[in-house]
Structure formats: structure tokens, C-alpha cells
Image (tube, rainbow, N blue to C red; front, side, top):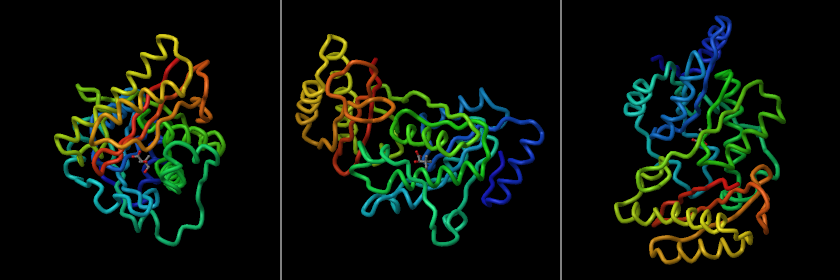
Length: 280
Ligand code: PAF
């Protein structure tokens, strides 16, 4: 496994691989790899000749007061996991390499930025779309892999690819959960034992929503209210948002008539967690 830290070197490597006719699968990450990332890597491995993973904690997607400085960083651990999972190249730049001068160009995917997490993390998705656009230009992949766990992020990247004609395919992979149902996230490492237990209320509330929808309830308000009751009953949990939205536009839906996304953000102790479920 090769580790590349310089943009020019990464671009030259990808050009060479492309000239050799190799298909490049790309998994962008901020490190702190877990089984969710590994499922993206495995999928990329099965569909491409070369798998490139980027590890870069992107400062411009953290809103003031968020955990940029404390975000888990353990390159040696990530390196081992990536190697074991079959990654061929890690692109691991420092901040000065990615942002050598004041950044004046940003990618903003309009309305899709505004709802759900966007309401509570102003500027976050602009930071994500901008760094991902840069990474696409650096890594030059044929396919890129994102997790459904960050559904809004995946939809924003999908739209950016379409609107800006990036010549690559986006693959969205299902959420990976632990045996109790907690969606895997790098931020789960912040949770104490008690909080980890309390965090199960996220997936449980999605299960309640699914059961209500399966049994014919169509009013979002009723479903959200039941989810809210369940979460409120958990002392350590504070709801940030609970929404039922259209899968593509992410606009709130009052009466469920076709496929929807049920999405939530809940703060457990000091940790903000998100989860979601697609329902058809
Ligand atoms: O999902 C993440 O880890 C990040 O938002 C991403 C896509 C790597 C961009 O920094």
C-alpha cells in the first residue's frame, strides 16, 4: 500500500493508472475508520482495479464550536485497517497542501444544503462539497463510494456530480450498524458506556416509524410525535431534528405517499449523532 501526501504526485499517479486502463475506486474519509468505511472499501475493491482512500480532516466543513481540533485522528491505526481491507493507495495530505492560500472558490449545492443537518450546521455542506470536488480533481476516480448514513451529504454529492459534470459514478452503500442497531460513526468513540446505550434510541425510534408506516399511518406529524415521545423518554437524549422528507429533494412531506427518508439528529450528552431510514 502506497501513501501519497502531495496533490501533484496523486494526480500523476492517477493519470498513470488511467493510461494503463485501470479503473479507480475512491473512498473519501476523514479517517477514524470503522466498519462502515470498510464496507465502502470492500465494495470499491470488488468493482475496481485500484482502491484509493483519502484521509483528510477537512477544516472548512466544521462549523465554529464543533469538534475540528478533537476529531479522532490515528493514522497508524487507519493505515493498518486500510491495508488489511485491500486499499492500494492512501491520499493523506496536510491542511496546507489542500488549502495553500485563502480559498475563494466554493461549491454550494443550493437548496439541498438548507434543510435537515444544514439548518444546524451552516456552511458545513459547502465545506463538504468543496473538498469533495477538489478530491475528485486530485484522485480522478471512475467511481466514488459514500454511505447512506450521511444521506444528505450523499444527495448533495450526487447533485454536484450531475450539475458540474464530474465524469464518475457515485455508489451509495447501506448504513452499517452494530449488533444493537447503533449506526457506526467515527463520533461514536466520544460516547461513554451509558451514552452508547442511550444512543440506541435513534435506531429504535426509526424502527417505530417503520412499524407505524407499515401498519398504514401516513401522517408525518403523528409518526414524528411518536418518535419524539420515545426519544424524550431517554434522559441523556435531546432531539435536534426529526423529519420525514422526499428522498431526492429533501423537502418535508406531510402525507407519505411514496418513498421517503426519515431522518434525525439527536444529541447524546455532548455528542451529536445522526441516523436515517428509507421507507417505501
Ligand atoms: O463523510 C465524510 O467523512 C466527509 O464529509 C468527507 C466526505 C470525507 C468530506 O470531508
